[in-house]
Image (cartoon, rainbow, N blue to C red; front, side):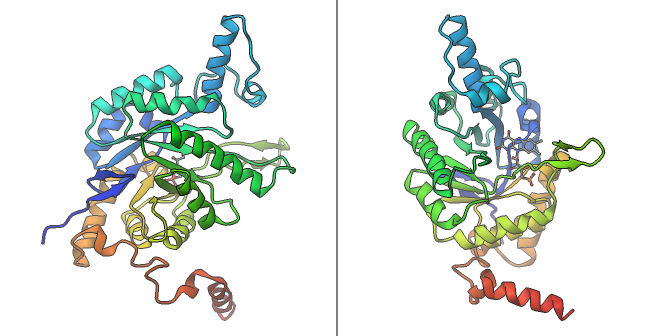
Length: 335
Ligand SMILES: Cc1cc2nc3c(=O)[nH]c(=O)nc-3n(C[C@H](O)[C@H](O)[C@H](O)COP(=O)(O)O)c2cc1C
C-alpha cells in the first residue's frame, strides 16, 4: 500500500500536515531550510507587529517634520527604538519573506500581528508582493477596557479581517483566541469576511505573580501537551461545518498529538514549543510517527482518517456537551 500524507491547507498543497508555527527559530533562513529538511510541510514566519509598522511610520513622519500621533498604544508600549522582538523591522521583514520563499520549496506563510485597524494593514499587500504563500493574522488583544463589550471585541476582529481580506488575493488564516463566547458563530463570520483558514488557537501569554518582589512576571513558558485538548475540542466541533481550512495549534508535541488533530478534523497540526524544546528534528519525529500510526491502522491517506472523531461524524454528540461534563464529574467522584 502506498501511503500518502498529503494535505491541503489554505488551498496550498502540502506534503504532510506538520507545519512549523511562528517562532523565533523561523526568523533565521538556515533554520527554515533545516525545518524543510526535517520534514516540515510549511513554515509560518514570526510576526510583523502593528507597533513596529506604526513606529516606523511615526519615525518617518517625524523625519519629514509632520509628526502624527497615529496610535497612543504604539508609543506607550512599544518604543520605536525597539525595532522588533526578532530583529526584523518592516522593510527587513519583506526582504526576509522574499529570501525565505527563494530558499525553500515549501510554502512560507507570513504573519501580521495587530489589534486595531490602522495603516499597518497596508503591509498585507506588501507581504503579498514579497511572495508569501499566505498570511496568518494574529489579532492578539486583551480587552482590559471594561467598557469594551464582547460585541465590540468581535467587531474589532471582523473589521481587521475584512480590511486585510479585501486588500490581497492571498489566502488569509486567522489565528484565533479561544476566549470568545461563541467560537463557531464567530468563525463563520470570519469566513464570510474572507478568511480562508482558522488557526485554533493562539496562546494567551499570561503573567504570573512574584510573591517576593510583589510584582507581575512575564516570563514565557512553553506549552504542554495538555493544552491540546482545547484546540482538539473546537477543531472537532468545527470540522466539516466550515469552509475554512483548520489548523490545530497549541500543545502539539508528539506524533500522537498530530494523529489526534487529524482525527478531530484538522487539515494541519502546527507546532512551536516542541520544536523549541526538542530541536528542529522534532518535526521529523512527528511526521514519521504519523506515518507509522497510519501504516499500523491501514490508513492509506489522511482523508480516510480526517474528522473520524469530529462532531459531524460522532455517533454520540453528547461527548461534546454539558451531558459529558456531568458524566466526567460523576465518574471522578465515583473514583
Ligand atoms: C518564543 C515564542 C515566540 C512566538 N512568536 C510568535 C509570533 O511572532 N507570532 C505568532 O503569531 N505566534 C508566535 N508564537 C506562538 C506560536 O506560534 C504558537 O501559536 C504557540 O506557541 C502555541 O503553539 P505550541 O503549543 O506548539 O507552542 C510564539 C511562541 C513562542 C513560544
